[in-house]
Image 1 (spheres, rainbow, N blue to C red):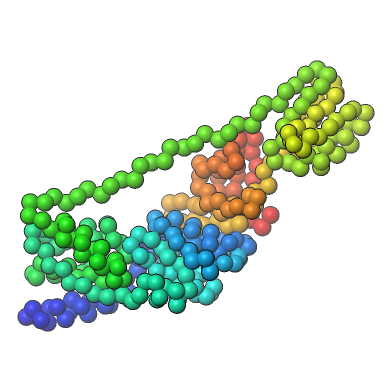
Image 2 (cartoon, rainbow, N blue to C red):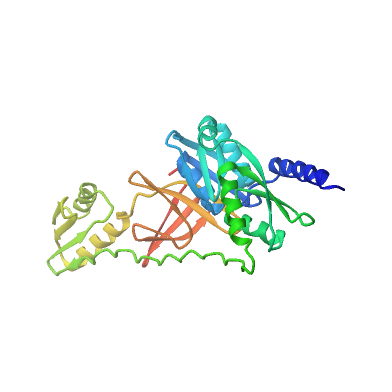
Length: 317
């Protein structure tokens, strides 16, 4: 087979792979359930599960509710984007979500580039490109020492530069840089309530003070209690035994009003989308929110613990 026909065959193969090949995370099978979850957060979770940075255009707005099981990440992305009227594109190691017109305007169409190597094996150059610029699909021709690249034009330029810098006489393959591991931050511990024989005070971290004050007064109508909204302190004049009951009552109601918006699970991890005071967080086992650690994530439910206390939130609460 002459060189011309080998090149034609290579281009055809790359074009075929561009439509058939999936992103690196496509084989990751996931189950997900969301209820009135912000669409931006859904894309953030999918991108995080695939190991990608995520950029979402400001025009991507709205809440979604759905249940999807036994889908790859790519299939889930296709369904969510198409049913909501948006599209996604991989640019290097970043998942970009926007309207189809915006993606075409900003990133253009895909192209093909041929790069010849002289000093390193084409297979090694291909592996390096897959590592450094995962959004570019590659094909190699060992007989011609040729690496064929297919992808967004800006990514192709980066991939070509990576190969050229790597393909130096006597050069060694650079080792991939390992991102530094984030150190866990210890949660702020609530202040221990001050207890005395005749009077006591206890701080409320989450509960509505006026409502709790009314509950305490109904339980102990013959005692004096007061609530200070600025200091978030509940004070009372009781016996020591009665004050112990007040503490138990406060602990029963003083929990953060977390709202579970969705759960996404794969073979090796589960991610929960939890809303608190208008902000949403993506949490995995061991993560903390407002000093509460995620103890367990199950279908439709997440359990939080703090010292000896625990509570569970459920989807749709």
